[in-house]
Each structure stands twice: as structure tokens, then as C-alpha cells.
Image 1: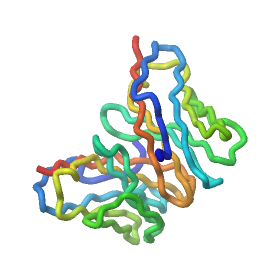
Image 2 (image 1 turned 120 degrees about the vertical axis):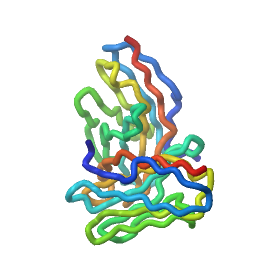
Image 3 (image 1 turned 90 degrees about the horizontal axis):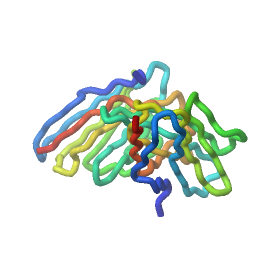
Image 4 (image 1 turned 180 degrees about the vertical axis):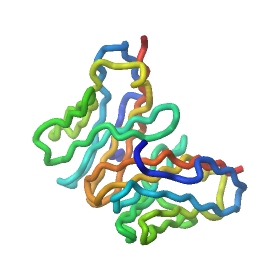
Length: 113
Length: 113
């Protein structure tokens, strides 16, 4: 079974609008971390936001927020006020235990002017 | 710039050959992680080291090996290369292990001909 599922291969959003990228995960470990990364066409992986499984509040980092719904095992990324530079591939990832990380297949976001 | 450096940036080699990829973590980071990103397999976790010791293993082939040296830099050795080993290899580092944020290097793009 997929541990990380990103159901949207591609998404479009109008500049200045908000967009939600979906991510669901599967684990039986009570302690885990959830991450979102951005990969522009240049190839580098840029850390965006982190949510720990025991965190009570949803994580926020500037225009990025993580909508963490533990019971539903979802960790959606919300990007507010989209910019053209947000066009990239976005990966959801989960770390269980000490090190093993699992990444989703990614969502390609295109911001339209 | 994440502070993680990887060399070389690009590598072209032939099947059957052996190559070494090098990674220097961010200053102060003790954990190093290696990932492989290919079109057909997506982003796969290979192996993690913490302060010189192997801590977690993912989908790493027996032809591949890695180590972390006393100065905390790490090397990933790929031998008996096959066409399918062509991929982008990322190194990431974090301060400790556990659900820590990982910062990725720019990657080494390997092409096996």
C-alpha cells in the first residue's frame, strides 16, 4: 500500500489565489513527521514546512500552511496568494521512526498569470 | 542555498563502471541521507548515517554502498552501473535524527550510457 498518496498529478491556479495540494498518508507509528518540499524545474529540493504527529496546531511558514487532520491521515499544503514563482513540483513526505522517509509521487503546480 | 554541497553536479559514465558521489552536510548537522530520484521510481530513500554510523536503510541496491567519515562528509559509491541507475542523486542533512527537517543539496545528475 502507498504510504504517501498525492492524488493530484497536476494543478492549475490563478496568480494571487490560494491553492490546496492534497496529501494522505498511512502509518501505524504514533510518532512521525510530515514534510512538504518544492522542486522547481532547476531540480533542487526546497524544504517548505514540517508538521509533527504530536503537534497540536497546524504548521505555518509565511504563505504556506499545513492543514493537518490526524484522524483522516491527511496533511494538505495550502499556498496562499500564489505567485508565478510557485510553479513547481511539490512533494509530500513522511518520516517514521529514526530515519526512513517516504515521498509521494508529487503534484505539478502551474500558476497562471 | 541550503548549505549542503554535493559534487560533482553532473556525471556521465558507461555501464559497468564505478562512481563516487560526495556530500558535505550543513555545518553542525550530524545526519546525512541519500536519495535517488528517477522518472520511473520517483524519489526513493536509500540510506541514512548519523555521526558516522548507519542508522536506516531504504531501497538501496547491493551494488551501492555509502559511508560517513569522521568530518561528517559522506560518499555514495555506485558500482557495476546499469542504464537504470541514471538518476538524480540527492544528499540531505539534518541536525539530529528523528523527525528533523532535512535540507537537500543540489543533487548529482548521473547519466549511465
